[in-house]
Image (spheres, helix red, strand yellow):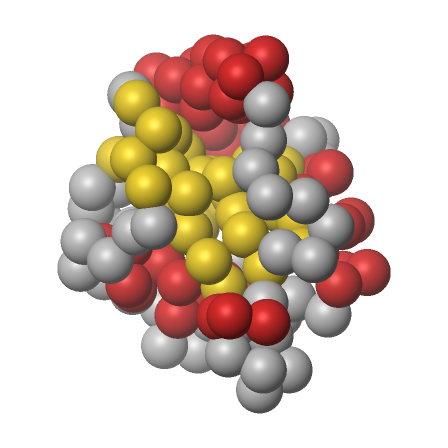
Length: 130
């Protein structure tokens, strides 16, 4: 079964404004699956830097991601490195709970959330296989 790359509606809206492409997300997921993450925040939650517009990761974005190896990745939150240093403990707790919930969902329930637009699926030509 292929690895599913998903994003919350809020993430998708912000990503569009920041110029973050599905291709950049796919590259980030490939790195995550290889163990290249910036921080493990507990449970399924990770922090991952993503490069945009050829500026590389140092001038790019930070994302908060829920990840279950070879199964699914859900991008939950994104912010510019120039906007803020990190998320607060309260944000981390809320995102962790949300990420845990997404990781516990059955495939049918996950598909239901995609069909109503709560989650969006990232599709890339070189989709990663799990």
